[in-house]
Image (cartoon, rainbow, N blue to C red):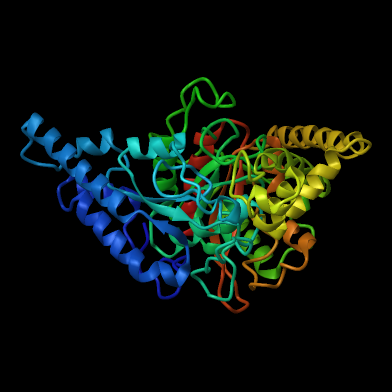
Length: 509
């Protein structure tokens, strides 16, 4: 719950109700879905232009959805002859009743546009809704718009959006992080209590850290990718951003589980992550990688990490040194695997089968000329860079040297995590090497931008669940939040959220 003394509330941002508070107030009859969504849309109209967090706002559709939910709730009350809403049964049936949410604009919705912040899909209207978005709506949530991102989710700053970078609510000169920068900005600014993002190499956790919110990447296969425009198919995972772990658990519970439209999802139902969420884990053991404490950290990140460790120890948590020998190999392996998959996935956007077209067939001498013109003009610089890199590592003569080597490194990375978990329940480490950086400071240095993902890409390569929590503020101006990251074994998402709730309580005490 955000309060006026919340240390992770940006300057000039008023505290807003959590998703759980909003749901409970509606269920008790203290307000209505229509009133909540009308207030949210009014706030978006006034403040979103200042942050450029949402690319599109679905005002009419959201209000229609809110009125439908109110009618449904009234019908339930009439049917049960309830005279009081003190016990909000509707909150159990619709756990996100009336809660406004935003979707990263690479998550399909059957209304409005799904642009991936690219000129290539500038006019694309999806005919269907992604499973994660449909499950949010089935839980009572109301989608109010689509959030900004780095083009096709390729970037770590949101500066590669074809429609302009979102602002970091902590300071307009700072990037919000990426690629889910718009989602993080929207939650940090209090425009919505929940936003969905996607995480291929840190694209939920890194912007969450930079904007001072909670960001969760579930285990690969725990949340359906159906309706997520593919970047790296073996790495992509949809996940939420919220202000609290409790809201995170509510949202994750709603979207997780098997989906027949996604063969990579786990066949059994997702476990209950709400019942024991607030029960501390007895004799909790947190592993801290020695590699994450060995130099290279911004002084404020190092200070916040050590402060978090001390608080945990004072609360009885056992801190154990672990080793992740793969740390140096993870970035290289990730950018080979991710770029190779991006090259394959984006090959469909040729101006004929998929995507917009540069000019017309009459304007080009050959079909190849059309392909070249379309992809050169409509893809941005970072997307083209990754396509070229991916095509190179998959090409004849280089496949074994680069791609197969990266796959072997990926297996080793998973093994090193598995070995570390033999000694601990979860791993604690920084989310990023440094706090949010100035706009334009890294756009001309791809390597510096890629190193933003140093502490996050290994999780995606290993398919693990991980969560970022705001843990402190910088002493160096401008004031910025600093996040810490918790990582758990595969499919231990519920256990990870429970650990995160326990650590969150220590950090906000």
